[in-house]
Image (cartoon, rainbow, N blue to C red):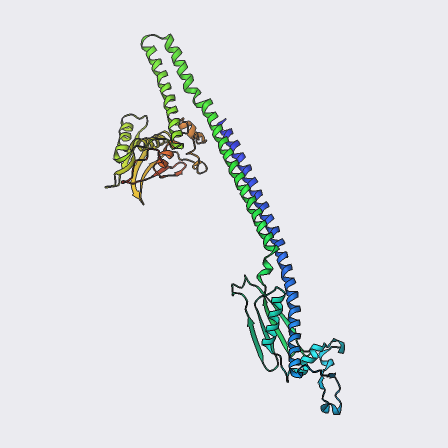
Length: 473
């Protein structure tokens, strides 16, 4: 029945793990969809910005050209003739003439814009002013609410000029991405404007930032809900396992000594003389055993509620080990070789002598119970990093890896058949040891291998100048 209870709890735990895995996968999928959605929104914003920036750049180029023409003619009108065939008297004409080779450029006359023609006409007499262009472009961006950093380069057959405008602090490239745009000023493409424009932070703000923040809040809320639900479910599984262990404990472990006591009392009533005394003594032994069990449960509950009083004082660790060596050397059903290896000059420990002695005795009793004859037990002490370490090693049957993390739980017993045959217990001894260690602000470690033996390492905080902690905190 106990094995079935453990299997049911393990199955429930596996189901919980599967549900948690599916939840994590669902959240990752949701985050992926959200990421794609936000990426598309950002790309749409960037595309819109590129489109507007290209329009503003072309407008700025035209404004720069207008400024040159106005400065040259001082506001007066002027005529420009674009022709592929120059007449003999063309040089005498006061009108500006430009020869556009349509065949070479593979353009029809209607595809040559007025701007391209004018740029061609005045590229030598009145070349483009890059600083003026940058100023027009900067004002246009500012007026449109798209103010950002940019770099403009002007390339002609004779030279290349570059100008940079900054309206914001320079930051990492991936935080301020840029895009490139190229504008050919003439139909022959010998005059080129190259612009490198940074995306403004406004692209990533506004409605997009609101959506991002709300999405992040929702995601955090979902994660928090799943974590809280998972913790609650794990607690329920743990409580279910404790309930199953207690049920097994009450129906199997307590029934046997109670039934034995009742039988001995009944036989004692019918017996006379020495026989009566013998059976009454057996009944008393069983009842004392049950009373000791109840006391252990109460002590552990006090530890859990931090109500167990500790009487801390400086004492020699040998005083906690020697009584067990004497006890098992004169009264043991097995051949027990119990030895102590105390670090010289490091025998003094500040702690509760009674509880530490009982904890060591608990580990020694377990080692004898779950070992074959002869039993070899070594108790070693050492100091390390402010901790007083007590190591109890044996040559017992060992504890399986998958159950080592559970042996300190209340009422838990190793389900392996060999452990059940070696000795009966209530799953409280190691729980008591763990709480004694915690009360001394320490930790307990277990190293065990099936068929080789086990090693329990108790690390107790050793503060020789400490004060008594009557609450066991």
